[in-house]
Length: 418
Image (tube, rainbow, N blue to C red; front, side, top):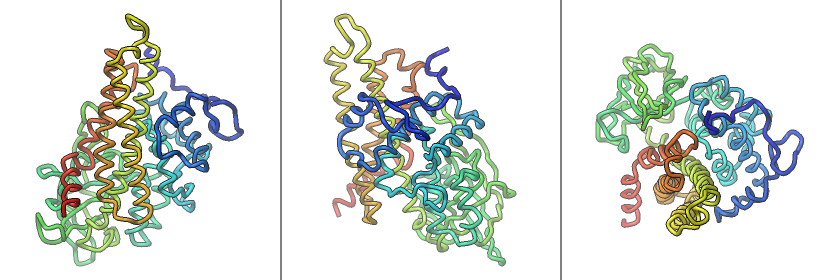
């Protein structure tokens, strides 16, 4: 059996230099420590670094070896979640009253980078719900918060964000055609279709962007409704594989009834509700893409160091050195953009330019680094024994998800040229 698929085991996290009772690898090896320095500025703050190293150790030792099974093995996922809770690594960016560590965004950014080395890291460690918790905390009525918030934070309930529709560009929500009509009793009836909705196949709730007044292309008259997926008329139509991978779904809403208090924010101002969510979501994706780019770079570096070639090592060849140089340059120039965005969002400043720059840079970096890593690995980089095909797929998807490169390039340029 390929080594990459054979290392998932029930044992605990191994030592990383020494043991600390009840902790996961507070001390890392000299080589791992050098890797942290390799990525350049911004450096991880001293008070956050031990936690980052524990998270990185958990992802490396517990999550990554189990990646091939986590998409289909719910019991394994729940077991790893229990381990994360026991280790004190669950929900680190969530408020303390919801069971999290209450980390500030700029501190959590370093953790998110470590979690993101695996696509499954944020889910296993309970941080994927940060967007949902933030949205409901800021915009849901008190009764709705009381009903759902703690259950979402604990992982008992899952939520998907249903914005994109077939037949219209997902990058322009003003073209939304899904409609919600209010009944005399205040409840809503929703009709429409959504597609390429992440996690919709197993979601308990859906944030649905619907038109409650007017019509396309008006940007007003759009509202966000929190829709229980068990409601009559809510249908998961089909899964939409993306480059061979699952996780995206098409939905149909045919006369779905939504309670009156499940409207988030004010009627007709749904884009205000979603603006902060989208901005924070793009930042979190960028941080996780950095983690995956760093993982791919490490694989490439190790391959170039160890692989015999006609004369010496593979890494002795200048063309391979060029690939290594370009990949490291991409990571080092992208990280400051992403962390600057985190700082501006945390400070409450306008971060639209920074978010656009970071999103394009991080997506391109992940694609460039994984492509280079595959090239250095040769045929092995295309096969099942390394994570590189999956990382490359994520890198290609990154340039479309959350708005294609062209959308962000145009938006940033227009703001600069005003």
